[in-house]
Length: 122
Image 1 (cartoon, one colour):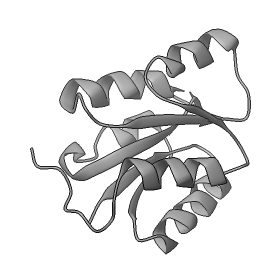
Image 2 (cartoon, rainbow, N blue to C red; image 1 turned 60 degrees about the horizontal axis):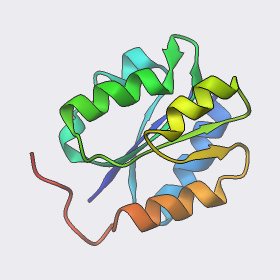
Image 3 (tube, one colour; image 1 turned 135 degrees about the vertical axis):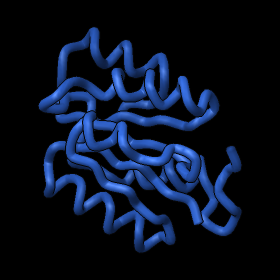
């Protein structure tokens, strides 16, 4: 089963999006910070959804780490609004979605990964 890494410091946003993804058959690994997310085993990830603004950094920092370990890992970002330069930097790595509309994020995950296929191998 695919695992979606979901990193957001808002517990409410994380929980709402995680439930939506779980209903569609995805396993979700939730993290509230960069530090916690960096401890995740990246091997079973089907994709990652990263908040752009976190208490201990930003999602583009984590994206760099993820892509060093898994260069083809699909990554998307979401935000309630942030500095245009941060959004542009994120767009160079993946789509940027605006909270709280999670529908486009769920559709992106569905297009990017398929729950019925096995996760990627190392």
